Image 1 (tube, helix red, strand yellow):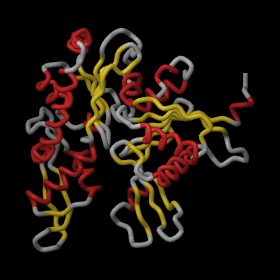
Image 2 (cartoon, one colour):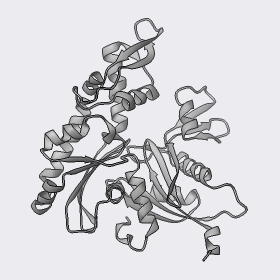
Image 3 (cartoon, one colour):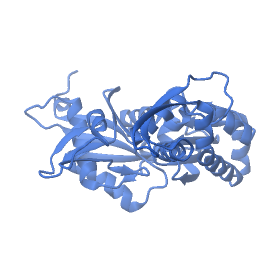
Image 4 (cartoon, one colour):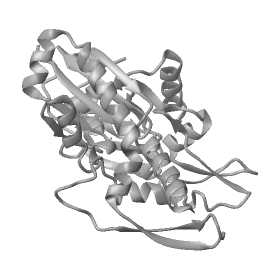
Amino acid sequence: MFNILNLFSQELAIDLGTANTVIIHKDKVEVDEPSIVAINRRSEKVIAVGKRALQMHEKVHEDIKTVRPLKDGVIADFTAAENMIREMIRMIKPSSVFSPSLKMVISIPSSITEVEKRAVRESAEHAGAKEVYLVQEPMAAAIGMGIEVEEPIGNMVVDIGGGTTDIAVISLGGIVLDQSIRIAGDEFTDDILDYMRRQHNILIGERTAEQIKINIGAALTELDEVPDEYAVNGRDLMTGIPKQIMVSFSEIAQALDKSIAKIEEAVLKALEITPPELSADIYQKGIHLTGGGAMIRGLDKRLSYKTKLPVHVADDPLRAVVRGTGMVLKDTDHFKFLFV
């Protein structure tokens, strides 16, 4: 039967990420955009969000600024975050006479503080939400990957996002222990910027470094499937003239080595403090890898070699968290125990 209330209410599942924001509406991914806003400095009005704002990033004049509202998985710029959420919600619905009442389930990093939680909640409320529920990212990722989180079985989830890597051991519908380190996709991008400057005397922008990471990012210097060399354009630091060089995946593997080693250390530390019965489960089940960082070539192999455990990469690592958040949204009564 058609429910008249559906006209006045809208339910959204949001993965508010440092690098990307993904929104599910009516079981469908409606928004998948970079977490960035372009603002006019004079009027303080939002000019663009998402992909359009990213195209402007590092190419603006003095009247325009681009802002990434989230840093290390938490809101760093409250106003920009609020504007970004509001504009992204507008991408879903055509403007109607009635402003629908919004119910949101938002995923947040597991290590987030009370103040940071309040910032997320208030940003969502200012963007028009009447009901806001927060769910921890590793939990949402586990649900999105099809893990039975309520069973008395230990599962380890490693979620490598844009700002943080969350490592959690989950059992009986709760997080038994979690480690969170601020080394993830953004750090990988910085490593590439730094490497290109030191090794090749070439200065590149953040967007170019991001493209290098996506196209030839690797965790091992030897891979089964070798990607082609990638053409990198930047400014020669010696002459100041634009130039192009070719870069291989093995060079990027060297550039990322230190950061990936820190993620390995954090995983080993989490395994060390896991209760023995849960350790036995993890030995059988292995480690579940998700988030954008999980797509770095050879990372699963490298982690598996280091931990001597099987490592499974989620089917769609970029969307596992939002898929899980969407499943929580569909049955908020059942998943009440997850809300932070």
